[in-house]
Image 1 (tube, rainbow, N blue to C red):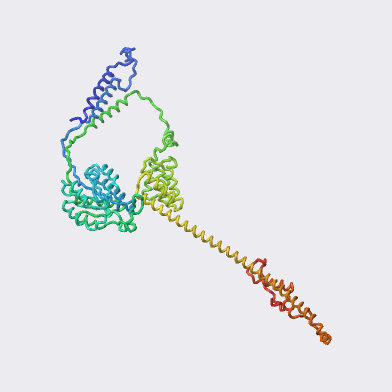
Image 2: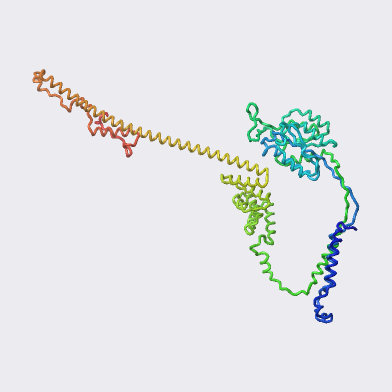
Length: 604
């Protein structure tokens, strides 16, 4: 038997012996005033240990605990442990084409996220290296088990890390060859959109010659997307056309011809998991280091268990026990369970477990009732959060919003999920106000934790708000046109009415004026005839004397005057008939009456 930490014995046992030696040799305080015979008579017999016996027991307990701290073990010998690794080099394309926005937020950031997930799969198991390439290639990190360092360097990479434009796979193979020159078969995982190259025969020949097996995870879409420069403007060609970069599927020949695998990137992590399985399937794990270690059988729990048992005996024999009145069961129950200031009651876990089972079995109504009741009693954020989830599953989004808003987590990830769920509930309301609040909560969630699904939901809400705004503008334009049209129609109607009124009035005035002109003309004609008769009277005196017995036509029976003269009664009748044919109500204030036929009526 040996001790892994004998220093505890060296430094803790001497003080222990000194302390308990002083306690064992010290007399009782009563011995200074009474003799041993008197003390024996004064003492009351009891079933407890004496002071010296109890001190000796505590001394033994302390010794056993120190012995346990020194970790006594039995040495079983040594064994050799070997570490093996596939040694995977990761190459990240950082050319300008990786800034295309057909993947969120762009191809480069999406590829970096995939690379970090790949590093998590092989953490502490495989050695990883990192290469950044565009027109030229540079070694970012050699092979290492420290994936945290590789992930940190990966985060710092961008298109500005290499100033040369373009994509050259051959230069990247040279870096791999120089880095893994002493290795046998080399495994290279490329994250790229394929560039613009169509013939990869030189790269395939170079990879086969130097034993490089290529695996490619391709990014982008077949439709492609434009690329923005540093000023957030689209890059154009010499003719001024916007350049569109597409995913180059011909790069798959480079992977398949060298014995590797070609996979198109997905939004989920299934592509990364499949790529990791394929690399491990064909990779020949190499021994990278070995270590000889000792095997021990630990014995510390034996002295520790004995010390705890002796401590139980020592504490139970401290003094004579007296009867203690225990409170009634009802009072104990009230103290334990009826405490309004307690945050969580003693048996709350039973109710919460019932709510959890109801949620897992799909009984969301029961789960919501349990969690909402507990949240109301304790104001517990977890209960509010679970109640909000249960109400959300039922489609009661307003109640879910109420519980989400009362939830406050100190953990950033939980609070980010709460903001995301709150945004989902507001978005489900499908109201303009709900969409705006959903946008705000998605942005709060992304400030705390970057999440791809939340970012996609935020883009969808922004698009919905833009479409809603366009529809409102379209509707406003339609309403403005309709109001303008109605206004024009009213103005046209008013003008037509005024024209008709004016026309009717003009016609009446014209008719009256004509009648007056006719009367005046008739009078002038009569005066001319009288004047003419006076002038001819001396010449025709004899004739008039001879024809004196002939009756001359009177003034009232003259034909011209009968035709041209209109009485006031006839004029009023003519004006009433004229008003009946008019389209305006300027003169007529009541409903029109059918005209009565008068056989003696004048033609006008």
